[in-house]
Image (cartoon, rainbow over all chains, first blue to last red; front, side, top):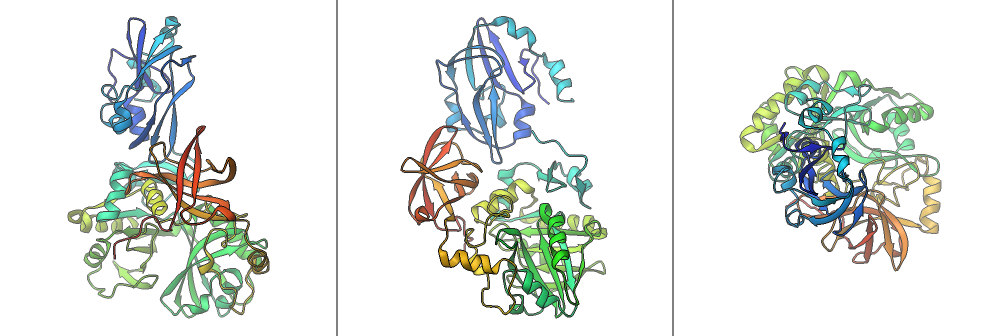
Length: 126
Length: 370
């Protein structure tokens, strides 16, 4: 299971990459493997202000629709248009090309509540 | 995300599934593989080559005795008298209000011996219902722990069957069943399935399950056969518009509403349970009907329970939906008001607050090339 050390992780299986006051969010390798073939991604609307743990996007596999939660509060400032054309990027490159949205942090202290790679690994039983 | 239910029963192939990388989930009280590598790959294997499914969770109920034919005809909607030894049919079992207790296959093995193949999730309910109405000289035999079953489906299934059973040259025709042997154990083999493809279903003693599973996979290896899970089974049957109990059928949905009238015999001498109510429904006219639809624009796939709209009004709901792996678009089945249930009628499917355009299409959505 691929768990990069430079990311922070939410119990709900999203990853966060922090750069200044902007966080990039996607779903973990574990999450994509559990979902398997992703066939559709519903992106959040840019400009939306959201609180941490709100459902902001939906990833659909052949079998089911799964909500994606933002691990941090803030304003959604960008979404990944490539996922509309090629939802399967979530399966092939979950930490790279398959980032889902960027959010401008309104409460950066929330980052301290997220897990590091080791703690998330133990959360998923690895 | 699904986790295996420790209370769920295991089939004789549990170890084979986990060894093959099967992702196990609870389905109808059984711990079953939802997929091995990828639902899309397994789906494509069945459409283009072959797929092997463990269907041991399905209930095998053997009915025998001098009155079994008459009794089954009073219990089931189709006419078992039409079956010669070695033939089977799709049929339904109704409650008094013509709601569906279960949908099933019935095979006449020989004159007074029948095999019923029922849904896993309904087996207990079915058995209670059958025992309640059992009469005359007919006995039921249901021993799930001693039985296993496999389905091999797809255009190359027949080649794999021929290689696995070299001593048996005469493959059963569509809906027929024969008794063959594997390693001196009887194997009932029927030309049936739940995928919209040509294929076979095999019913046998659980003691040979692993050996037969491995043999079929070995013979199928060079032909593109993959082990396939319940995920692909569901996407395949949805493209073929075959009903799934709990979605298109339940104790409040009649076979006429589900578009299954060819499997109801009003004319047979036995008055099957639910017939009077069903006849009344037919004479008064149906209120709602099951239709197949396709999403006509881009957007999320439809799912069960999403509302169906027409002219600003909810007219029904989706019973099953998803992205069709073959056609790469959203498809589904929906139970809607009868006045809107016409081919070509345009509808809207509400998906998380958005309304996506859809059109009613002919069933099945997928038909195998002839």
